[in-house]
Each structure stands twice: as structure tokens, then as C-alpha cells.
Length: 343
Image 1: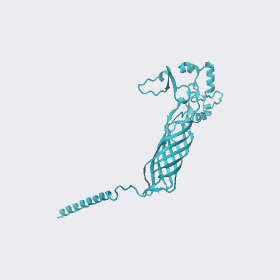
Image 2: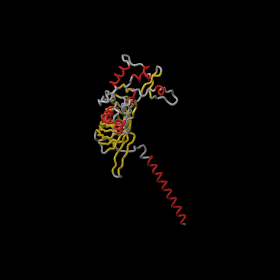
Image 3: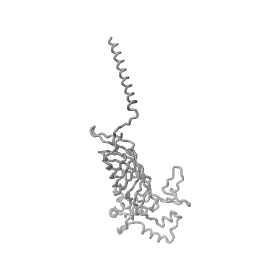
Image 4: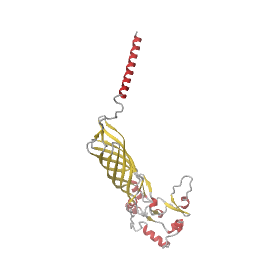
């Protein structure tokens, strides 16, 4: 009797559960069919114009980090896509490694003269510390045009009490980056040219060996035994070759018209950030090739035979790609101050 009652009770429970599940499916397929995920939701970006003061810090820098002060203007056509223009002014700060180089570089060595034109004694090296700073390149600022995509949005809960609206955005664009580098310098000697066969081993017309060495001695920076400083010359501002700019960020909305931004940006540019001799040109027959070369594994590489690096010159051949990673903090003001709501 008890067993029969238990069986009947179990069957009733199963039937009730099945009926509830079936009723739920009917409800989802009925009145809620095709309904939006959220009704009367705040659309923080849709048809709104924003102004964002920003401060950025470069990351993983070897010799000089930069702090950028700027702003971004943005207009969003919908709640998930927009366009923006951003600009910033850069201030450079030397790292501890730069100070170490100025104190410990192999000073007074002729082959190093183009890179670190300092005397060999310690007192002179300390006096020339500012010259290491002059060697380094500077990012003076940038202006970028960007497309903004906002694929995700939701809520951020703090301590299960405070809930804030957030969205994740991705940006992609092109930046016009202004840099200042060390001016071109030529520290080659007549012995270097004749001994290594650069330019066919020919000294430029109008010079003999002694005259060429004297001319190069005047152009190549050096701090002589007397302590007279030949300051490193800086080149003029130029627009660096750029590979675009891209990154992602998070907007945290404190109210309807103000949000806080945390952003990561990458801005690759082609420049000589260290102001040192990084590459040279080797003459192989009638063909010029870069040294150190970009020859792949198994490819013929003449640089090991010609020894044309370093070439004792600093010019456009010494530029390299650097990624320039940045972390940005900003505050965004939204206009109009009252956002739209979904249906």
C-alpha cells in the first residue's frame, strides 16, 4: 500500500514538472517571441557627442618613457559604432637605464664615437650626462583619426551593492606622429673608407685623407681632453612613418553624462629612438645592402664578409620600428547630457 502511494506520488511530480516545463516553452515562444533583450534601456552612445580629456603613459620603454596629455572628440552614429579624432602632446622622461649608460658607456673608444661622444675619464662622463639625453629620440605628439566599435556592454557590480553600466570598445585608425631625432652625423675616417672599401674606397672629391679627417672631426661630436663640450645636435621635427594605431578600452558610466575610461593603445612608428648607429650599408659589387641584414635562414648574407656595421654614421638608415605601447586614463563628458532610451 505504501509502495503504491509512493509510486503514484512520484508520477504526479513528474507530470507536474513536465507540465511546468511545457508551459514555460509555450510562454517563451508566445508573447516573448522576437522581443528585444532589454526594453527601455539607456543608450549611452547613440547619437551623442563626447569630449574626453586623456593622459597616457608609455610602457616597457628602454631609455625614455613618454607621458601624453591630450583629448579625444567622438561622435557615435549608433550605440555600437562611431568615429573619433584624438590628439596629445608628449613629454619625455629618461629611465634609470639612460643614467646608467651615461656613466658606464665605453667612452673614449674611437669606434664608439658616433654613439657616445664622451671622454674616457669618469669626471668627464658625469659632466656629459645631459648628452645622453640629447641622443635619444622624442615623440613630440600625435593626432589620430579612429573608427570606434562597441561590441559588448553590461553592468559592473562592486561589493554586491554598487552597480555601474560599462561597455567595451575597440578602436582602429591612423595616427600622424611627430618626432624629433638626433641630427645626422658622420664620424667616418679616411682609414675607415679606404680600409673597408665603402663607396669603393674613394674619399669624396675635394679632400685628401688629412683634409677629410679634419672635416669629419669638426662634424663628429666629441668632448676633448680640455673638457670642451661639442653638444649633440638635434634634427628638426618630422612626421614619422606610421603603421596605424589600435587598441581597446573600457568605459565605466558614473551617471548619464560622465564616464571613466581605461584604455590600452599600440602606436607603431619607424624612427631612431636611441639616436645611435643601428644599421649600415654594405657595397657588394654594384649593390647596396643593409647591415645587419634581414637575410633569412639559408639566404646569402654579405654583411659578415664586408663588416660594414657599424658604419660610423647616423642617418635615416638607422631607423627601426618600435611598437610604443600606452596605457590611458580619461574622463568622458557626453552631450546631450540626457541619453536616449530603447523602446
